[in-house]
Structures are given as structure tokens and as C-alpha cells.
Length: 294
Image 1 (cartoon, rainbow, N blue to C red):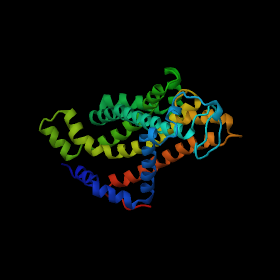
Image 2: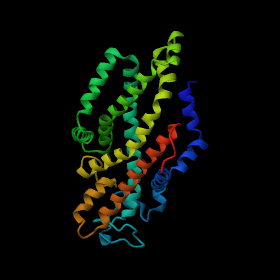
Image 3: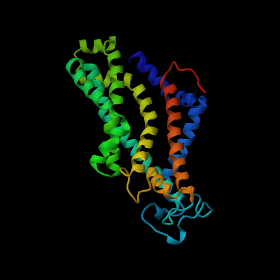
Image 4: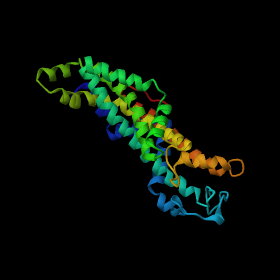
């Protein structure tokens, strides 16, 4: 095991990681906020006043009611309970965000590892294609891809993954380039270890820490991008209770029924903020030389 790999494993031991996270107040706050959102998503059918309102139920007599004990977040234009829709929307946002980030990693990590280890022709081809994708703003590119694929949540997730992977490819490539001339890699080559095994067993364990931190930070941005696509009408479609779609629909009633956009907007704000704080905490956990911050 290499020294850097040993340090990473030490930093990831539960007691050490928990201690670092607990000492970072902002990261602990982010973890607490994320726990609230995650629990809300997991137990949405049990804590929601009207679980059927997450689908296409209609209650004309209850339309646009302000927050109350019966409806903590009020109701929408069809009389559906907004707390229910925000709670079930947490499921959509967290699951879709996780799939988008994992898909982007599945594309970017192998390409970055290949470019960094192989060098030469493959490095040039992969990095020049990466530069072409990065020349477009990620939100604009995701919007264009989602519009071409069709107005659907699955297509929006695919569009984000296709516009996000170059960041991971470049980051991992830089890590692999710095590691491929190290003694433990040269020794593996001298022993005749195949290139794919060197990448998998020796390079990736030592190169994934910054990629993991970046992915945790990107999770919030991906959820925000999903909400933006839903707001534009090219992401989730009615009656899905996706947060961006709720904000888009509620803007028509904002001047008279403030709660319609306020609570889905707060859900987006809290979730994105939680992942940003958690990303900073994870950076400290994965960096054995990091000092205590916050």
C-alpha cells in the first residue's frame, strides 16, 4: 500500500472521519440539513398529510389555501397539499441528482484515467474533446441536450451527465499524470502488471479523493440545474412534484399566494446549501494535512 493510499484510508476510518466532521461546524450543519432532507424523502408517504396529492389528485374546494395545521405549506391551484408535494419532490431531486452525478463519474473517470496513464495520442484526443465540451456553459449545454432529447426528467438527467463529465475527466487526468511516474507504479510496470490493473489497483485509489470532493460539491449544483430545467419546462413534467416545476407553476400566483413558490424554493436552497457545506467538510476529511476549519 502506498503512503498516500494509507493516509487516505486512515482519514476515512469512521472515528477519524466523524471527529473531523464534528469539529467543522459548517460541515456538521450541512450534514444535519442533508439528514433532514433525506429523512423527509425516505418517509414522505408517512409524514405527508395526503400522499395521494403527490400524483394527480384534485381537490377543487381546497385550492390555494394558505398554510395551516391541515396544510403546513398551503395548497396549490388544484387543492393539493404542498407539503406532500415538496416531500415527494425531495425523492425526485435526490435520486435524480445521484443518478446524474454517478453517470457523469462513470463517463469522466475512465476517460480521465486513460488519458492520464496512456498519454500521447489518447491523451490528445480525449482532452481536446473534453475542451470542446467545456467550451459551452454547462447549463446551456444541458438545456440544449435536454431540449433535443425531449421534455422528460430522465432526459434531463442524461443531459446533465453528458454536460458534466469533462470536469471529472480533467481532474482525474491531472491526478493520474502526477502519479504515473511514482515508484510504486514503475515497480508494477517492471513486474509486468497490465495497464488496466495498474490504473484500477494503484492509481485510482490514490487519485479519487479530489474527484469525490468535487462530486459532493457538484451534487447541489446538479439539483439546482435539474430545478432550472424543470422551471424551463424541459425537465420533469406535470404532475411530477419536482421542485423546479413547482416554482415554475407557482410563479403565476406569487403576488397573491406567496407560499406556492416560497416552500419549494426554500427546499432547493436548503438542499444545495447542505451539499456545499458537506463538500467542504469532506475535503477536510479526505485531506490528512488539512487543519480544522470553521
